Length: 245
Image (tube, rainbow, N blue to C red; front, side, top):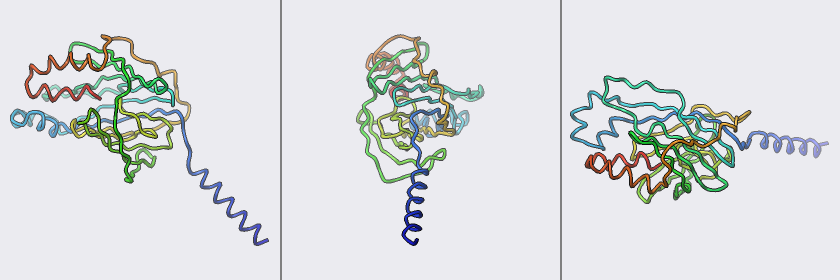
């Protein structure tokens, strides 16, 4: 009787442990992007910042929707955030639409850049990741921290959960063994955090790439905007990073 009781307790513990961890292969996520405007402009152009800081908001929020499976995903703007016309701040690269094909390791990104809209067809961004032991809870999921390097100079800080079996994230950031629910890009003074995660009844029909825009590779796009932004001096050269992720 004692052996039977112990066996029953043992199997009950196993079943409970198994029930506590669920894995999902499709997801719909609402992301909130926070841009720390004062810090961003202070680094972008310190002298100019001192002159205009009273006309800038401390932070600005943008919202995005991510819908994905293990095969493909789409990241697109969510609800609109009104911009106070009395301020001198205008969001940059806030209308990006990023389609990712994980099977083919390719992406199609629609990026409006001032008066022109580019449709960038290229391979996935080459990010070097290092996974750490740090963890935090985001939107109800236990996430592990990873540090990434893009283009050998752009640092990324990401928190991913392996409970969602998708190697994706905000914008074109991807390549971890699970879904990125939190992202920070220090050079942009910006963070993205999931505020709502849905893993049931996900509408995968919404995952279709944008089709409008000038078709270019990532390198072609960078060369095109580099010519324009360089004429703006130091300020313009620092703006390019907004279109690299």
